[in-house]
Length: 437
Image (tube, rainbow, N blue to C red):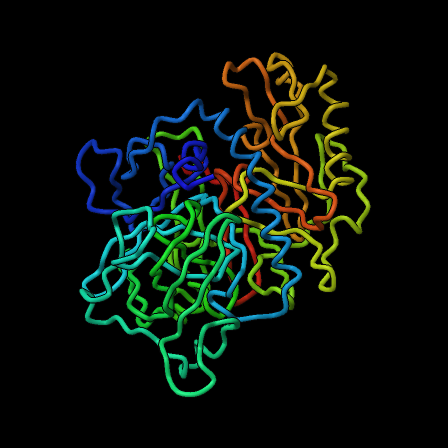
């Protein structure tokens, strides 16, 4: 599936854009100093994709593509520890959930880069790129601060599988497969990165020269993972390893949420849970999910299905690139069966959702609560149910993992209208209800 086709189904895709000076009665601008989160297909989006089908059907369709990302997340768990910003041959998800409005170089050149909390990679298309899908590319020759890195640089030495000679010097170049049907070649480089009013000097990224296939996001990727080459790590003391976001409802049109970088403006009284680190893959944001309640019933789930395991990579992660929350199969079936029991209706399957029922029974649908160490996350119905295009059916918006996958993933549909705070330095994650529409 090429990137343009994928975009048709990405109603869940979100756009993060820099706030500007507010003009009277203009809902697309804001007087906030935060970066705003705008639905990709909303009126305020700078992109102009073909008009999608109803938001509900779009989410249902894109949920069918979640397994591609889950497979990618699973492959991360089998890799050895690495600080590589871009690894040769590594498979990366071909679906973007939201993008960040960034400026690269001096003077800054505007790009909309995919934002991914489970990835450390940073790369973008450069001028002269062969096969790149976007007419908007980064022009290194226009930037006075651009520097291509050679194979003698420590950053390149950390990488594996790069095309560097055993002797002599050469530009640090690499090839990467992407999305299963695409690949690209790039040069490791450094330049300034501007987000809002802040500038990160000497930010390392891959400058893409050639693309094969149609799955590569047109204007690049920016990782917010926990690895040494992520945005948080490279920004050093600028953001103090702290960021948060509030994602608006997928049905939002004008209204936006926000992305906050750094400790300033973060909620003061927010309950937190420890962030756990997998030594084999330090990028992922693991949390300790201790249980799930459906209504007043604490669902009986084998603790082994929720526990964090550094040997197998099992556990629960918070992820910005998966649309609907997924649980290991026995855990999901236990949650689903208790939900069905309390709704007491006739159920059918629609795409990735196997618990759809007449919307007239929605009034008796129980609330679902995720219990983490130190905090509870009670989902409003809009975060646990999704409706059919006609509105006649309501479906439980969660699903089961494949047999081989040992991850539970808390996804964006369940995160919407919550402030999710990542304090990487202090290894804690905060969650609080916040209506950011």
